[in-house]
Image (cartoon, rainbow, N blue to C red):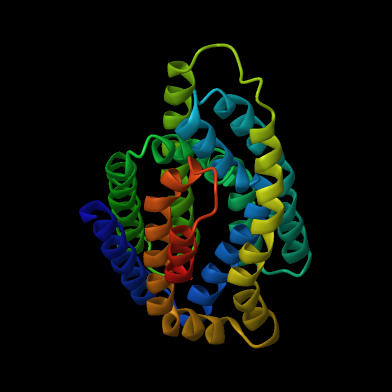
Length: 272
């Protein structure tokens, strides 16, 4: 969609400003922090978004309030990881890293733990509305990151704060708005919550594989090596995101399907 294309363009512009503003070592450290945060997404129960989407597409969205609350509480546990990294690098005397991890520890529950509202527009098949919100968020985030790069050249903490703060504020506002729209009662269909837990467990392997290689490059080679690695894999990441967009479009329809057909098998083969 048009708005999704804008998000990709804004992301590439952001990468350009960061690469121009930071040295290779600083850019590598920036990416290392983000990949540790990405790895902690496991604790935010990512499968709950799928559970909310299925509940919304099939019935009444009442599972949203409980699922989002459980994910937020679980993400508080995930904050322990960047907090531990803060302590480790503080003792190691690496101020740039421990300050960055401290910011991540404070914002992680809002950055990842409250993002499951996306399951609601997906379940309603309001893809345009979802990407409109994503596009606005990407524009605001990119503008803030570009401004911090120009105002504070060579600073890693300023763009990192902007990157985390804008989506966190969006998640807080939209989560509150969506909760107020729903009835006070909660869903009695607990299989959606169990499904969210189960898919979170299976998604953990995919999340680890997406971030572990970058963490290992930083740990065993150098921050500069990670900066080059990230730049070289940028187009591969864009291709992966494009295929995930296709999956997002067809997933709500699949959620209402009760039998596995030959047509579904063809769709899965194509997206794979």
